[in-house]
Structure formats: structure tokens, C-alpha cells
Image (cartoon, rainbow, N blue to C red):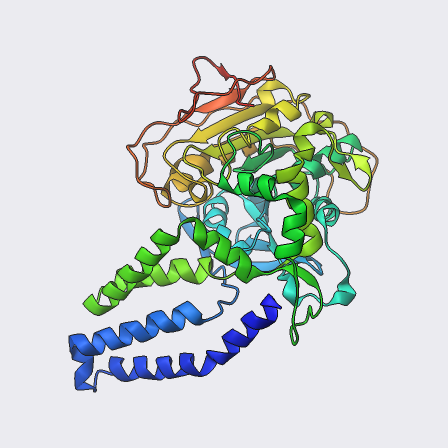
Length: 482
């Protein structure tokens, strides 16, 4: 009933939102003498805060019309190149000569299916497409998918990734941001065990919960304490009429948003109070930054119940992947079968969602990858969102990712039907990028700038660094936290 009550409350507030809009326009009209008074500005600001706090935010646009390539600005066109009921694959096609486009490595960017739309990775796409041909998974709101389209669970997620890699060809590198790190690692494991020639040359896992037993965060502890039955009883609801997905079991976006905001409620309240004051003072730049951030942050989507529950159960409760118990279509997922795919893991020192060591655990699982084709990087002074967005990402993380991708490039069969397994490419040594000057943090809480070091992963047993510190490379190799 919660979903129905939410819809009724949203509809009931419709007339009040309309009245607030009219009042705001009245007090912002330059012909109205009150618009130039503190009273008028206060009324207009209050109406805007009310309207924005009660509206439902739709899916934002990527809005990436151009990019810089080799110092030249070129047009960018979004094209859907693959589509299924629950996902579209969007290509950011740059207006470049064919020879240049074929020279740049293709990258499949797997966006999180965890509540927000893929546009949350707008900054990630913007940085990567200066050097690569970028494709991104554009997940569909489960509320908008009819029941006739069937289920979508964790097995389907893995199958979708494999299908996309087949469609794009075996020369496509894959990057997983946060939640998809587990299904991406599972997909690559399945492909390598099957000697699939379309397996990616390299796999980059960024802030992903591979093993949530390492440095457990509040999110991890909540899932472990409550258990899967609690989530099934309390957060799964049916989509109400008149949405296209009427009667589908989902984890609603508004519940997810409430969970997100409750983790830092004081900061969100302060941000809205500051927004109100910026409007009164006429600080348009600061007010616009607030609008841009919350237009993205408050836009959420529903997840299918089966996918959400399986993810919580496998990743946060049972820890199926690191224990060697994860199954895909009733077959064991074996990361140790990965031999020909290079691996880079990226973590944030201040990440309070995916704790330190959780992503690095992939190196322990992927024990068959040669040491010279594995690397781990910890970015200092950034939190979870700073791992894939912001000035530190653009200046320090993105160049390292591009260097890793280019160092592990290989030629592969063109996209098409299944072929006989091709010979694996010879391992390529990963070269570290020269470390740039630290840039101001964009998302994380400001902290003293400190240099970050890329580290080559060591296949030996990992060692957990001391709490609150990032392990540094004392030589060319560094042990990884478990």
C-alpha cells in the first residue's frame, strides 16, 4: 500500500505545486515592485524550495553535445546500438574520421542499476570519450516495463553484459562502476571459462562490492543484520496503476531515495537551507549548482524485486562470489578461470559506501591473471562519488584508466555471430601514468592534498592495511587487502 499512498500524496500536492509556481512567477516578475524587496525574494525562494521538494524528477539528459579530441572540439551524437526490455546500449558517437575512431579503444561503461539513472555517470563519460569510443548501459525504470516483458534477475544482468560484449566485438574493454562490479566479474568469468573470443581485453572495477566482508560500511552492516527476509517483507511493492509496469514487484525508487538521503540527512537539509539563502541574496551561480546536482540526485528509478533481492542476498548477506558459491544459470562462477583479461581495480580512500579492500579483493579471486596484467589504484582524499566523478577523477583516475586500456589493447573478431575460440593475446605490461598535480576534490569532503600511487597487484596472499591508512608501494609490487 505504500506505493499507492505515495502516488496519492504526490497527486494531492499537484494543485499546491501549481499555486507555488504561480506565486513564484508573480514575485519574480520585474514589473512587480515587490520583486525588488527582500519580502518578494523570500516569497519566491520559499515557493521554489517547496515546488522542488515535492516534485517527481524525471530522467535527466546526458546533454553531451561536443567533446575535445586532440585539442579539437568535435560534435557528439547519442545512438542506441543494442536494446532489450530492461536496458539500452547508448554509443556516444564522435564526428571523427574512421581511421581515428578505429584507433581509439572501445569501452563498455556499465552503469549502476542501483536506483539512479545512468546519467549519474555523465562526468565519467565526458572524461573517457576524449580518448575512447564510449558505450554506456542505459537501464530502464522497471516501473515502465510491462509484465509481458518477463522477469529480470541477476542471471539476466550477467547475460545482458555478455550479449553487449558480443555485439560490440572482442576488442571492447569493460568498466564497471560500483554495483555492477559483481555481475561484470561474473560475466567475464563465464566468458573466459567458455573460451569466448569476445571476452574483453581488460576489465576495470571501480568502487565495487566484490567482498563486503572487508571494511564493512553502514550499508553492508544493515544488509547483514536485517537478512533477506526483512527486505522482502518491507521494501518490495507492486507498481500501481496507471504505470506501464502495473502489478510488477519492484523495489521503489522513492524508498531508495529515502535511504540515500537518510545517510547524510543533515547535509541535505543544510544544502536546501543554503539554496534558499542563495535565492534571497540573488546568488544565481550557487543556486544553479544546487539545481543541477539535485535534478540528478533526486531522479530515481524502480528496480525489479528479483534482481534487487538476489543482489542483496548474494553480495551483502551470503558473500557468494568471494566464497566461491555464486552460480550463473546453475553453473559455478569461477573467477580463477580468467587468464587473458587484464584487471585494474580503483578505490577511494574516503569511500563510505564501498569500504577499502572490497574492490581489491577481485585480485585474490582472479588468481590466474599474470601479475604484469593486474594493477590496483587507491585515490586519496575522495569518497565514493569521487572515484568516478569530479576533478580528481578527471586529473588522476581517468588518465590511469586510459593508459591501462591502451597498454592492454588487442585486435579481435568483429561483432557478429559466435565463432570458434581465438588464441589469447600475449600479456602486456601495464605502465603507470606519471602522477599529475593533485586537483581540488569535487565530491568528497576536502582533505589535505596527497599524492596517490598506482600499484601492481601481487598474486600472493593479501594483507590488510592498517585502519584509516592507504597502503603504499614500497617497491614495484604491493600486497592487497583481503
